[in-house]
Image (cartoon, rainbow, N blue to C red; front, side):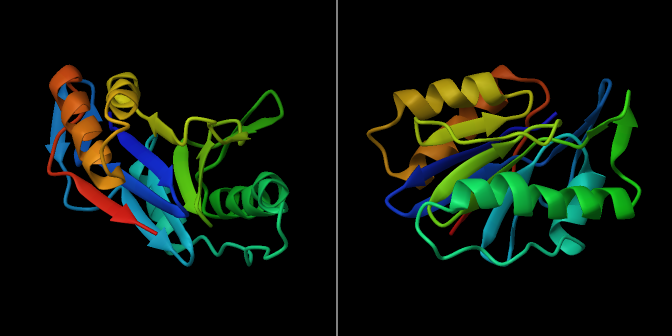
Length: 178
């Protein structure tokens, strides 16, 4: 289910998401959103609506550092530690063979776009765009092909491509920016 994609461009991050809630062959077009802001962060999630609800309503991110060059370390250590605590305290995190697992989401902050994977690794694409969810391959292709367009138009085009190519992606689409 889902397609969340984002573009980092000239100090801004634009994220877009679909509205599908999928389980097996069942699809519900959800009223709740998969892309939202939390303080200075813009977050778009896949994996679980519960995880997204916790990131939106319970997660209290630590203050973003102002020191140049410190954002990467902050995301990997401080931000992820706070995410892990929130997910664990609210009963959503899982543990298998002594390794914690969470979900997958994109995070935009301070003009950077990060991807958080289920093992809590944090990555930042050199391309300035990324996508997660079942429609991510179509979305990344569209984001690459549409690099001449403005960020909002690229994200909208990527969502349309994912909806066309993936049964688990449905509008309406929501696009937010920092």
